[in-house]
Length: 454
Image (tube, rainbow, N blue to C red; front, top):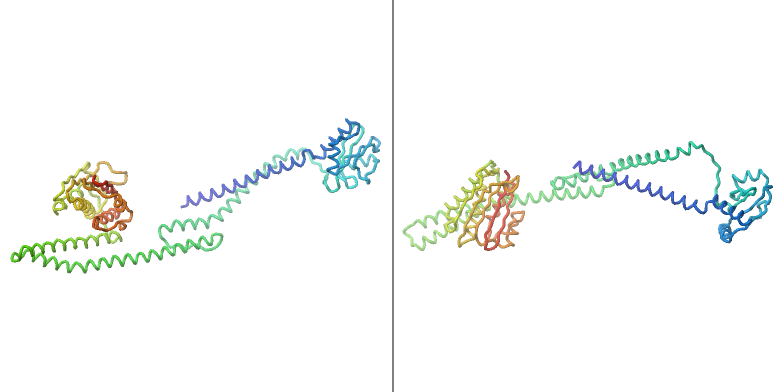
């Protein structure tokens, strides 16, 4: 859980850093583009140079292109000689003088002329003045040392590193402020699978989310309490019914046994008594199966676990079926590839499970079949040992296979075909934290694999 939360915080921090870095790059290129666009062809220094050169080359006349440029941008131009007298002008405002002293020239080269921003260019002994509209350009005179200029790249690098460090620190602080409460919520969500009651603080940015998790937790707890009560009620009801049935069953078996052995009765009457005895015994077995299935389903059956050889389980189960007359119409075989294959099991319950599977094969194949129990030499995987019970009978339809392989054993339909036998098998194996896998094809037999923890 800690690793997952740390990963979220790291990813969040990296995301903020990347976003900040991208924003810095965008800002840098935007500034460069802006400066290039503003100080390219419209740079006043370049403009006055271009116009001055053309005036000199064309004997102080301007091309139509430059005249249009001056007119469209409300610019004016003036040429003065070495004595400070004007000898050429175009679009010049009326307030601009036509004669300048040396002091005037020195002053306007750094400042304004009648509040007009002006730029000067010297052609031989003449001076060209390019004037801009008032309030269109801001001019500032400043000076600095070469050392300062040379230190600008280093300063910018330090500034960039400072921005990166500050971004990382801010991202970390912000990430912690956002992720610490979120960590509690994540822990709470993961705790929901364990069905624990959760109490998150319902405040801050994640107030609604914390409230939802708390409500979900409360509903789960209430639901589990209701399910537990229902399961206890079902188990107690089944146990009570089973207990109430045992007494009349014992009386029925007692009287039917007496009638069956009474030689003074007619043969037909004794046969009827025998049928009563057989059905009563079936009913008694069904009640016992129901009790066992319920106990396993609701974890009421204590397991006595010990390491047991699976070959012994196979032989005991097969012997029970042979002695009980179950296999009178079937042939059987036990194949033990390795006598040393063991599992941690309750041997009484596992014998019951294997016996049930053999009984199912015999009951569902009235015409007979060959039943084989195999203890494989090699386990199916590293954690499990296995027992395989297979027959050569009529098989099971695909839809029934899907039902039998359902995770919840009580979802298997109880009908004349399958009854409680396979449910008990699944409950026994699941109580051992094992797996039951059944495969079958119609008219080709059935294979059941029991996987048990070593």
